[in-house]
Amino acid sequence: MPTLPEAARAGAMKWIDDEIARVSGKRQSGDELWHFREEKCDHCQWYREGYALIRGCEIVDEITISDDM
Image 1 (cartoon, one colour):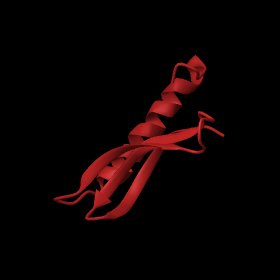
Image 2: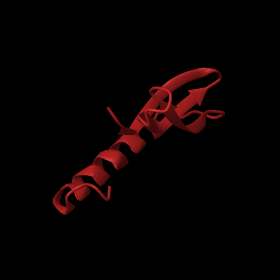
Image 3: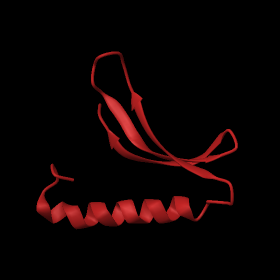
């Protein structure tokens, strides 16, 4: 968020809120919400980060919050 222009921040917050609501709507009893940070390559400092809704051993849905090239 700190790198977004001020005018874009409200839209970004709405998108995040909408994504959280979408994934929360799929949540069932016993599900877990995990934070993830996936390194894209060794020592390149590129990564993807977000949250995944887990049911048993399956990913039900996920939200990617940050994704470097």
